[in-house]
Length: 418
Image (cartoon, rainbow, N blue to C red):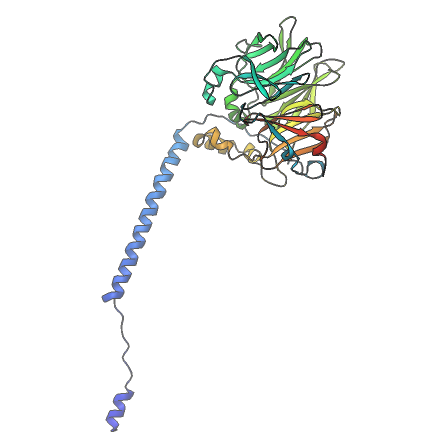
């Protein structure tokens, strides 16, 4: 090999300069074009969603005008309140034969209830029989309720009759044997200048002379109960009706969704659930404290519905949903955020929002002083959801629900077994 040949072999390679020409440039241009298409598509999609949403938030009117409410931290679910599955031991009765049995009463061993299709039913020996109807059909949707009627509270009177309060129609006395219905007080009758828009529950003295009942709101009807809860309206009242004179008077005003009521065994005071505030008020109706009112129990672990007596001398309080602690309560979270409530109700219906509320049914037994005695849970609402009443009779706890197509019955002795 000559010296010239060796130099030629050792000559350094010239660096290659990569330009945008050829395949490399084509790949780059393709990638850049795809990225631009993605960004434009994403931007258009975002605009198509955000603009209508913003427009709805600005232009639509909210159906509620909520005020901020303040709650204490809910009690820890420990000890007596510790979650369990005792309500899941209940058996379903009359499944798919009735809809939304809100409240329950007994005359002897014969049971009665009012349902979402506007009827008062007699339940005996596995048979369902209609004994009264206060409105007229159809009764298929929430918009039908005002015409159809919605019997809520039901109690047995001293003379073998039933006293029933219908959310839309008024206060009635029903003779289940003769199928005779007597209107005692129409909801169209103003009380102290205000109409009754949402009659809810009642309790009656042993002699049948006085009926204590709740009007949950003069603004909202029963079909809009979620709006009532979320707005926090304080126009609910506890009223007294005299069956001998027909006189009606207001015992307590400015309540936020007064719901279930129960007369004490001594008949000296009435307990009333204030659902929105997760508490129970006590109103004195006789004795030295007559006319006074105080708190019986506050900061409950759920939002109370009906109150009924327990065989131990205390009270059963039913709750369709809880305030978990530890955990997250949507209603507690929204209570101090009225702006957020307005926005939510501009965008979503009541039925949609109801699906977001946790279906944890709770029945709480309170002592006669308001102490927590025991709790019965169905953590996922698997057996009984939206429980509205716990009615004790013959060693069983009968569970009403304002939405379920059945009643439930729980053997109290079996429930206490590990």
